[in-house]
Image (cartoon, rainbow, N blue to C red; front, side, top):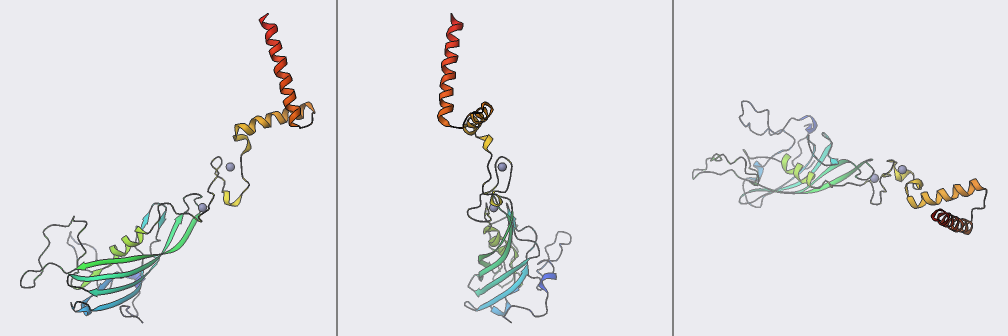
Length: 245
Ligand SMILES: [Zn+2]
Ligand SMILES: [Zn+2]
């Protein structure tokens, strides 16, 4: 078993990285939570490394548009933690199952996505005596790097953001998906010859001529129709002249 995997621990049933907040106080990270990794064995020696291979459950809300990672599905972490001067650099990949609807035909489609992970977790700021200095209310600094807390890092937001970033805006079931019929919504992939002839005015005009010919019992020949039309034109203009007189 690879280093970083705790035998006998069921990550799937483990709770959130941080126990429930009580009275608005931010609780310490739970070292047994699936996304929490202990960095203590790196010993703050720059260059020290540790590999982490884990299957963790996707948490709620990993989605964008038509694609999402099902909550509770396995996320495969293949990571390397490296001690650097400022903290711990986490790099590697996260593999996840993606469920989506095709943007053209709306049929369900699933695939595996592997996202690159790269995140620097920094040591908390300390004073000259090595005691932790509390942040000066800088909680809304979105770009601030995540902080190592009591030698623990919480990978959940890092992994979630990396995977969600990989979700396509317009997923397709296949590159040449023909989508749905714009007139009746039929699934064109199941019905390649599908069309609506009466919706094209040019075909509608020809259809009218054909049915007219059938009623007259004439042969469906283009020249016959054209001759007939010319006759009609001559006759009608003659009629108009009569009227004018
Ligand atoms: Zn499709
Ligand atoms: Zn149709």
